[in-house]
Amino acid sequence: MKLRSFLVAVTFVLITQPLSAQLAKTPPMGWNSWNKFGCKIDEKLIEQTADAMVSSGMKAAGYQYVNIDDCWMAKERDAAGNLQSDPVRFPQGIKAIADYVHKKGLKLGIYSSAGTKTCEGLPASLDHEVADAKKFAEWGVDYLKYDNCNNEKRPFLVRYTAMSNALKATGHEIVFSLCEWGENKPWEWGKGAGGMLWRTTGDISDRWTSMIGILDKQVGLEKYSGPGGWNDPDMLEVGNGQMSFNEYVAHFSLWAILNAPLIAGNDLRTMSDSTNAILTNRMVIAVDQDWGGQQGSLLHTDGNTQVWVKPMKDRTRKAVLLLNRGATPTSIAVSLADLGFTPSTKYQAVDLWSRQVQQLDQVLQAGVPAHGAAMFIVKMGQ
Image (cartoon, one colour):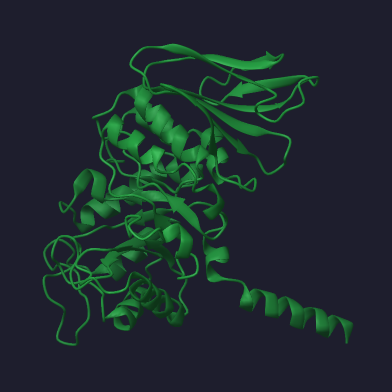
């Protein structure tokens, strides 16, 4: 009887555990077509990107979703009212692409909008949630980015919950990404509506000012993030060419300390070694994927310099990011006491980019390049 009761209890827990907790225990990692390619996509690009995700070492570093954004669908639904792929650019259909991606040990993501049309004017899912969710499941889709265009000003909670319920009803596991642009504070209701990540702002662009502007809007959102529901400051621009190497290092480091989804947006097939090195820095990725009870938060700001800090799950270490928003190099320092450490104890800081280790007395200090960041794990020393 005791064994039977235990099995019943375990079964109950598994059944009643929120789907989000099962699918998005850590921030999703992958790639999305929009930032680099916009509507210039086809099945060859998606398949080659899946190949590159494996050959570049990104899969080994933790990336798994290959996400097709807007413009994959035909201009009209089929005779049965179902979404269908563009017959020229995706002639094999989405299921064939999903099968290809799955054979690589990866997962496929797709896009629609909680409106009558997508942002590019193609058929979307408002009032078609059940049929579209069934089709996504039939195709083997693993991730849905759900936009907010052409929503007819209908209640946001109703629109997003309808798709969430439709996805759950299929019985197929699909990560649900709310792309509501932060208009109605989705961090407050997103998880309750079935979302597993939610955009906190409008679209990012490949500019330092855009990235920093989005960063500023993350301040104060820490309490809304955690396993099964992540704040999403939008996709990465690393490698798209309009920011410097140091700016991309800062961009990637900041997204990691924020426990943000790491969704690359560059051309994986042709990326440089330096871009690959940023995107596959496993020590930085480990910070992003580690849940210590709170996403990284702003500890101190002084003009162009900032200190961001995030607890790690073992409670003995913290990730610390020193950010120089200014146009000239500078030195940034923060005391161990301000970081919450006992000053009398010996500590060391591991630089997550140079791999160098420094012994600390009372202060963590580093020179930081213009528009750059230095990132460390601070822990007890020897």
